[in-house]
Image (cartoon, rainbow, N blue to C red; front, top):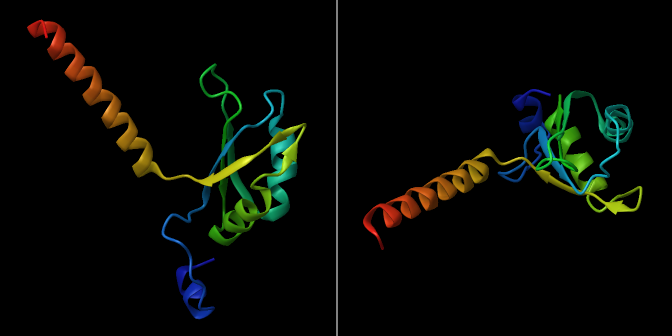
Length: 119
């Protein structure tokens, strides 16, 4: 849906709203097909990326074609029970992720300096 269409319908979206959802607390054994079945009920999906490493298991990114479909899915699937686990569905916010990475990098640099100077 084009921005002009959103504007003409007078729809107000929160600043963090976007087409990409970050999903946590997924059952480890959920398949891509099951994810498409669950999230596809809310609109056309461009891509789903399931976490496949030890540190990313139980998480997923779901990218919708339309921002309103993503908003609808987020509202309806937040807290939804899948195989005994309650989903945590959030809008992906890359700025928050990069800030966390920067913070961790600064912590490592500070620790290296402490060791180097014997503090």
